[in-house]
Length: 228
Ligand SMILES: N[C@@H](CCC(=O)N[C@@H](CS)C(=O)NCC(=O)O)C(=O)O
Image 1 (cartoon, rainbow, N blue to C red):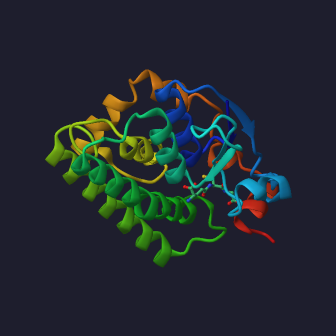
Image 2 (image 1 turned 90 degrees about the vertical axis):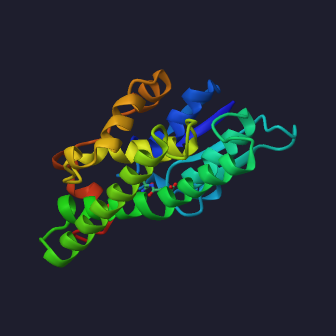
């Protein structure tokens, strides 16, 4: 059994989509990040960066002690290795999936995170920051669009991989990010196809992301230091 420490956010949904796609049994352990549960010592022992998602696999392949994994990209790699799914075995396919997983982890996720922050949550508008991250979000959508035009299928090539699973939940937020999908037809085609996958539907049905206006002042203080 795998325990998944989870909140309903794009990074959390990477893990639920992967677990659903692989058909691995898991138990959701909700972490109320708005209330600061990510700072509890028990959780920090599993996830020292005080972020969800994290997993604890009590039946690892080597039959040894439970293994805990934090960082959504590492979780995807771990589950791909455990299940033998969504990470190609051939070296070219494997490195392509790894490259695009790293691109998502180091670029798409963090930059869209900042774009969302300055568009939706900043207590006062900071035009320089809004413009900078809007341009970066636009650039990254362009990179993804060209890649999907090139492959004609999935992010890392002809096969659906953990690179798709890493990118998809962030693209769900395109409206809130101010992205006009009509400008990125290959992303739109890929997004429409993925959202029909049963594993993606089941994974994104876990929990529900609060809309910005539903996020309380306490949560903003805990998560973003706003009003501290
Ligand atoms: N690089 C990390 C980022 C995880 C992350 O930012 N998680 C957010 C929710 S999407 C979180 O736990 N935030 C809690 C906090 O900011 O204290 C990963 O991909 O796992």
